[in-house]
Length: 243
Image 1 (tube, rainbow, N blue to C red):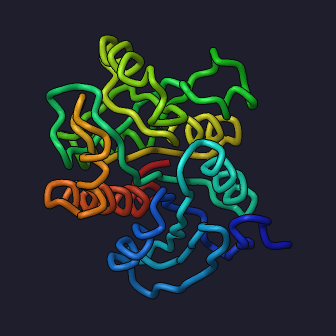
Image 2: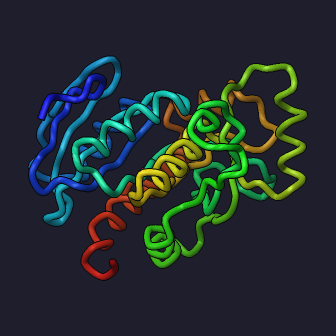
């Protein structure tokens, strides 16, 4: 098989599960939780490794920011035989009661981005895989489960108005990638789940929140580690106890 154009990977025997992360630095953090780690590729910001978690082989790759970049990674992972993908990412809360470092796990996602509309009409839902979601609820019962929103940018003048609009309907948080993952997973018949770490309090200044993430502020860093451990546990258990 020819290597995929962007992620520069080809099919690896017995490797069917992957974690995708927006931030390339998170790849190294996940590597510290794995055994038998092997560097795979680094191309155009798509940095990949593989390793074992309690004997389960897992691929980890950075996907960059936004739906288009995420879709490229998901499409090419599917092309090399990956059938289960968990996004371990960050998000901003859209409800006041969600503190920094708390996990938000989308059961479904508002498709407020442009990319997935090129695949299917706006009426098509972006929903989590039931099996992965059930395991997340079992292993992290105190996480925030519900609907989130994926969007295309931070700096438009009407962002605060849009966030208030969706917050009114109970949307838990916002990122830029989960809707693309969920829609493609449904279309391609694979399993997918997003596990998001809250890095920005609702109605807090964006720059302050992002700086908390960059500086690995204690609560955010703890949430990130919790999201990683949860993803690894789910990927290890999913085919051992569930179909």
